[in-house]
Amino acid sequence: MSTTKTAKKRYTHAEWIAEAERRFGKDAMNWAFICPICKHITKVRDWKQAKAPEGGVAFNCVGRYLHECRVAFGGEGPGPCNYTGGGLFPMNPIEVEIEGKIRPTFDFAPETYITNNPSEMSAAALEAGATEEEVTLG
Image (cartoon, rainbow, N blue to C red; front, side):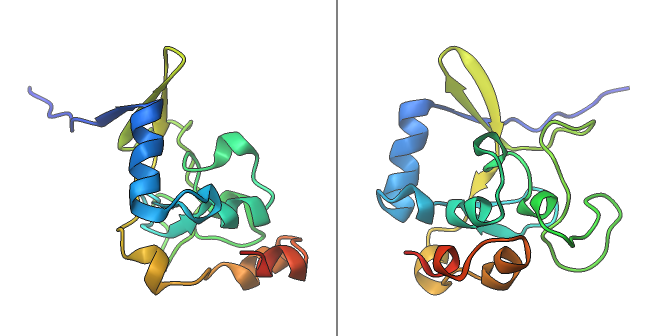
């Protein structure tokens, strides 16, 4: 019996930051990532608005921090979902080496996402408890 394991892309922390800045600019709130399960694209700003802890950004789907989301495995409909990179099935495709430790991370969203899509999470962020001011920042 043979199993095939998909190779994960690995970055040093400095390389990962440089790639994010190249794609989305220096403002980390605009960096966007794609959930490996539901394919929902989320900006760092959206995780913050949903009150996700720093460690949840690009590690868990933003749906984990909202009142309503779809189930990650077997759920139907669009994301966000309740996927966590720390669960039974770790599917985060990127590994970032930070101070000698590997952090599984979501892949970057397509480079065109930031210019073509203002934050789509505004309504969900408000529902999660963000203020109008927080939603309209940036």
